[in-house]
Amino acid sequence: MARMIQVVVVDDEEQITDILKEYLLFAIKEIEIHAFNDSLAAKAFIEQNPVDVLITDFKMPRFDGVQLMESVSPNLRKIMISGYLSEIGEERLKDLNATFFSKPVPLRTIAKLVSEYQEELS
Ligand SMILES: [Mg+2]
Image (cartoon, rainbow, N blue to C red; front, side, top):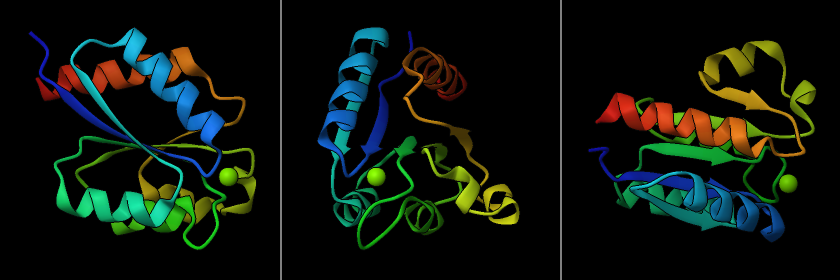
């Protein structure tokens, strides 16, 4: 049986975290989603809780998705969804060791990736 996977979803737009949360809950069994619209609140949560996967937007006020990814353990699986990936720069993208997607959010592809991570962790 697949083990419970802990996923943090971060976007400053509530609409995006809502749709991601709903879709992942529908598509994947044994998943817990922790959604945040404030990236610093997400950072604090990740520091204090076991998290397997971080799915984040790039452009957010105060603390962006790159800063967030750089602040977490390298053991986390990381997915970034943004319409502005070209602004990050290739070197920095490579260093993040994440998977990148453009908006609109490709829900099915992301769900597939998360269930692959879940299998790897089980
Ligand atoms: Mg944003």
